[in-house]
Image (cartoon, one colour):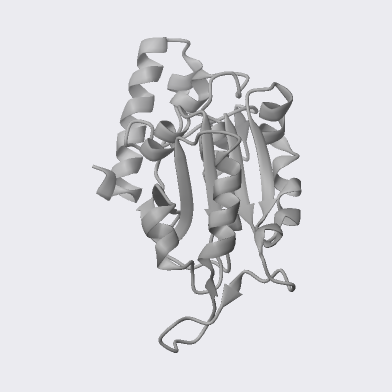
Length: 223
């Protein structure tokens, strides 16, 4: 998979992408990413990419021209399965959507800023809008990082144990069951005996019951 990210602040991405799962995915040749500074596609002397909105509302709007120039330039190099805009009113990111995106070959993500982008960008250049929650961020960079992390870890070969992703929360519309590790006893707090039984059938049954119980308690909307 390859992801192109269009941003006003490409310098903030390396600390995230140069570590952990995203870095290992790159090292394995399974995933690649490039960051593109939108200001490089501005046609004015100041390399600005925003202007006042028509109608007199407060705030600034990302202009269509540099965004169009950037996307058209990138489309000369590869064909995209999706061109995504990170937007507060977009489709809410969930595990089902992450699973779907993880099957794609090429994705482009436009990071929003200011009051947003010129509506003509959304109408004519974007194929999908995604939100990571019902709140507003200063920019779309953090949202794009979340999107990338949620989908790259699902690509076969990225995780050392591929079955790990299959047992994540939300994969089956339930939150994950409780997990325990050594020591068996700590401060009088014990690991459930069923997990020490070695009986795979009983353990699986316990995990399913606990997952359902926790979902009912914490995320009943999933049911």
